[in-house]
Image 1 (cartoon, helix red, strand yellow):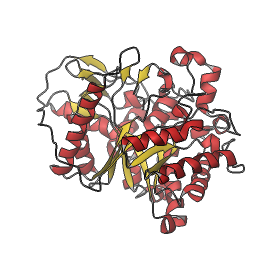
Image 2 (tube, rainbow, N blue to C red):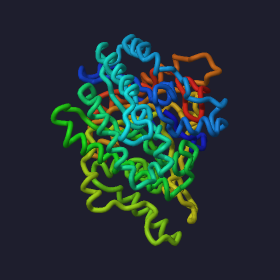
Image 3 (cartoon, helix red, strand yellow):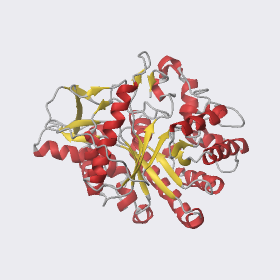
Image 4 (tube, helix red, strand yellow):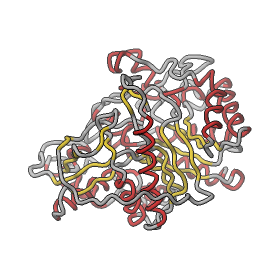
Amino acid sequence: MYKVAVFVCVTVITSINVNALNTKPFPKDFKFGVATASYQIEGGWNEDGKGENIWDHLVHTDPTAIVNNATGDVACDSYHKYKEDVAMLKDLGVNFYRFSLSWSRLLPNGFANKINKAGVRYYKNLIKELKDNGIEPMVTLYHWDLPQPLQDVGGFLSNNFVDWFGDYAEICFEIFGDDVSNWITFNEPVMTCQIGHGVGSFAPRVKSPGIGEYICGKNLVLAHARAWHIYDTKFRSRQKGSVGFVIDSGWYEPSTNSTADRHASEVMLQFVWGIYINPLINGDHSSIVKEQIARRSKQQGYKRSRLPAFTEEEQKCLKGTIDIIGLNHYTSSLTSAQKNPDPNGIGYYVDCEVVSRQSDDWEKSGSSWLRVVPWGIRKLLKWIKDTYDNPKIIITENGFSDFKENQLDDDKRIDYIKNYLSNIRDAMEIDGVNVLGYTVWSLMDNFEWLQGYSRME
């Protein structure tokens, strides 16, 4: 979990009706789980042959980048305490546990030529402990912790990234796939590409708005497709699992009922979904995104769009390579069209030509970007159904953060989860959305990226 605060808070009046709480049980096959990520909980950052990743590198070379100079060197110490983690999971009574593998713990230099046996043993032991306790593993291959040696030779901006990720994915499918049925390739691509390679605040802190961030996005979805095809051709018939992709998305409510603001809402959704999910379903970026970035690029004197195009071969490779959509959703915003878009600005957050903000009337959490807006998740789920022909969806993250200096207020957290679940149930029952499961972020308080340990989750 982490979102960059890009909202300007204002007081507005909306016409949203709050529905009565839906207390009907979820279907018997609906599954509940909780989630974590390797760098945020494992610790053991350089133990037993693990290599350095981009977050190890950031916290050790620029400690002031993190609140209170915190690091994930120890974090929750799950590398040594995974049995305690599983005991907590069993006590919660969850159906599944979503966790990520550390690429650097398995392949210390990032390449497939050297597999770290101690890293394999750790994840084998964790998966066995989960299954012995009746808990299904849901495994994310990449949750932001690229091996530093790969970053040193280009990382996501390298033409070789698709090969590197495909090799890594194939090793994971081969080693763990007989015990893992639910795979996720990438978690929250906006954070990897727009925040890591555009804004440049997250590791690897590449500041290349409008150029590098879009190259990152292209290579990321092509790498997902490579992994999907490897699984489909080599492992699916035997392991009978699925390969999904996690997108992070708020709901973007039009600020007014004007045509311009309703269009702005759709544009913002397309910039989130049309860059990352549309290629995996339809084989290409959405037309809105392509046309808008091409128009702005031409106005700025570029010979071609700053959004790199897929070749026909790449489009064929991409199309239909998602078995299930993982949705990380926390909050919503109000959107409107920019009155005077900057003609010279480049980057995801200016190319969209949309202004987003939140209402002061919406309940606050411990994070400035997270306001409590339960009706937003139902609207977003309905939009996904209508836009992509009702795909399978798992809510892979949803939750409420609190200030560390405050006493933990679980009443607010309980109300948040209760009301979001109610709207998910409405989306399923009334709107016919195909939601298969729900995941709370997080199992326990952990390293919250640039915020260190200053938030409770």
